[in-house]
Length: 355
Image (cartoon, rainbow, N blue to C red; front, side, top):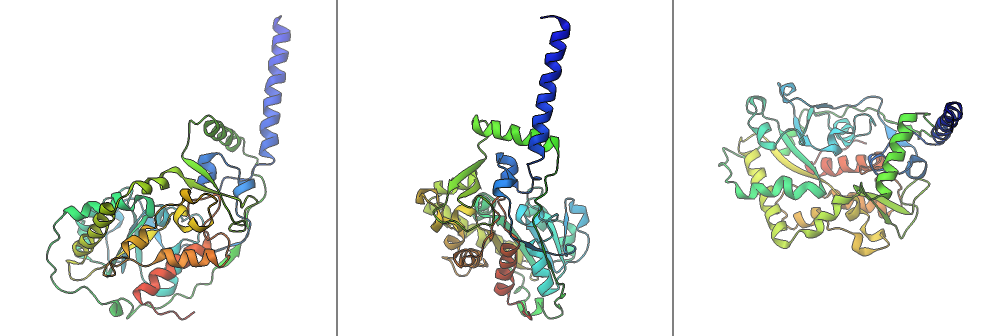
């Protein structure tokens, strides 16, 4: 093969590849959900289509630097992606909670800071909040909380602030959210195409098994074109290894965690659990063995623990036929799920509801 022929073949191959990339880019919708992005699933198949209710701007601020916590807040929230990674969507559950209660809140990422770092910070000691919330997704709950069971809590100084005082001066904000339609126009992003194709290859070659596709027995639970399969992170199945002794340690750990927070005599402690998809959608999985344990229900076996029944309010909405309580392309909720999660917390605290 002479140089001219080789150059022509190279040019033809390059144009063919470029044309293929642009053809896919003209079809592929922009990345939206973490499960679709990580697992190499197309938004065209798993992207939501029903409108989501959003706020014009977020009513909360997430800090990635503990130095930003330097004044009093009614609520200090230490949470994971269900609390910290929802800013771009503008329908995070904190918006609904703050809109109803009018409380001030700072949100700190528990993937960056341990609870002890917050409790030992100068601001927490100098300006103790009326409410301290620890939020965790269900699949990581045991490792994040059970270790507290081995600690000895300090004695209480006095009873923590009553919930009536928490809402004594707070007033609802009355902000009206609005509906936002799904984006169904291709982004024409070659980088997204290459990343998507790479994720598909890794999944097919079993080089990346972070996302698992589970068949559903009931369609209509999601507004996505593919409503027959459930996308979840693989590590949800780790809960299947938990034993009764682990549940006991978990309940004990929550109790000790509560006593440590409330030992200042001011702060009220609440543990807020974000249920996994495989527990929330358990009744609708084609293979029952794909379901995982409901840790919220396990924790609730001790009624003295300050844990709202977020599992019940979400599963009731799913059972009623409301689509996108969780998003098909994502491990997190749609706007309706966020609103219900906030309602579970506000109702648990006895917050006035004037809506």
